[in-house]
Length: 246
Length: 392
Image (cartoon, rainbow over all chains, first blue to last red; front, side, top):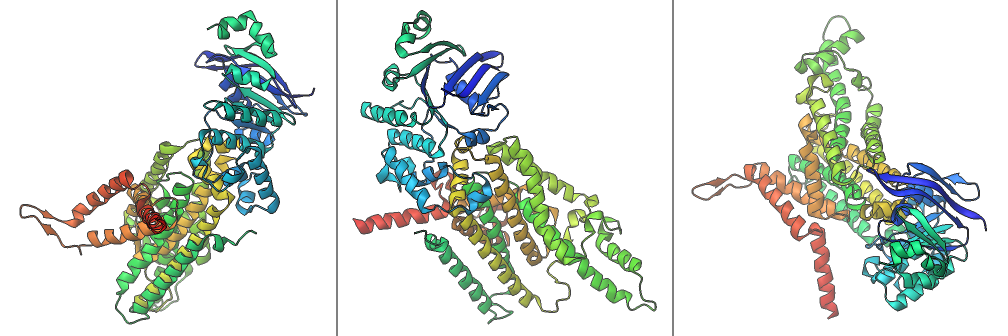
């Protein structure tokens, strides 16, 4: 499988504390990956680095077929290059409708002038309807996103990610605060997405990770501790010591 | 399928109709063109109020929609006023000077004319030389361009520096306030080339125009109404589509918009610059009606008033900014103009000139605490209640 994202030897320190310590990580172009680890393992910082929010002190991050370096690119440029991110807390634009939220995310020219002149055409609206069906919100298009339930907001945000049509989705704790039925649906949406693109899911919940049924990377103190199937890593003595054994 | 902009925003049409009716009504009642019930000075007050409404509409775009609390838009407003004031003052002085010099035996040389104009304008600051910034004061066209260009370029440079460094929230407000203070302090100096604290005066006299003020005031009322109508239309159009969606997103969650791939800084810069240009135009229409501009007009407090007007009217609705500004500024001028009767409590007499600011400050606090949607928010609340009442 082709490598889509390659992180090698990345180190980040905050006031002397090494949040990420010589981290190396690779993901292929149509792959689902779960990243687990205890609090402070550097999961969120890892996402911050890939999406350009935090600049690493050392290391390389190469992206795509042409192996472009992501270091030094702005968040907006990285997003345009094809990396989408979902935050831990559902962050949708609450006073805008579901349709407006999805249109905002739809893959289009992002420069101010073309956005100013943009008016949605039939094809864009059809795509929005299609996405709304995919995330189970076809009847909610004209509702304000703020009125949705917690689970629906999470899906809307995943829908916005899909609307961006990224090659890599970074998803931070998508199942947090969801009911069992909602989790199942979330798993289906993510598995569907992983058929055509790379999906990295950061998750605390082991049950949810098992449901995803994919390769797992365990982070600890800013570095990779173990990698492999869930059964493989859960048998690893180091992993048991730092994470599962507690 | 896609309905026209006006069809989707019927409130814009209502506003434009009301504005037109207001302008025609005032004209019919004015001394210049009508039955003379409304005095010329009140026509000027109304015209000035329309200009203030225009800058408030710009403020609503940047604060109400994009969430950037700029406390510097009155600086842009003042700059627009100074730019048009330079031409008005230069040209009128030139005509007076020409009139008096032509009485001499020999025709005056260009140097003599220039020296005489300089003496007239800059005598009060002990100078008679033209500062460099007056290089184009003889050209109405250039000064009109500068009305937009000077605030625009200042906003562009300032905004680029501020937004690039990701200065947001209250820090940005403080920075814009500092910019305003800096500009005011600079203008207060005699060496600024804009007559220091004397400012520019006599701006109500249009060079080469013989018409009385009663007529000129109506011209400016119409020009101000036209500018407000166009500004309103422009802002309503900007916020109506996806662009409005993006800037409201920036207001509510800037980081999220960035991760969607939008260059947030460029959007902010564009909005900051466009609103500064609108403020410049509003100022250029305001000061010929006021007759005088001096650095006190640019003082930081003016920009804070602007925020207060928009907050009292209600943010993020455009018409809210107009309501708030018209209401507060007209009531302000009534209270501070000495027309309001003093209230005698026996032991103490409430003089509104002194107490008005306290009332205004208090109502700002009350609005912020109990009616965050402002006056327009209350109106919408009542509409919703009535609709519910009808349904039930």
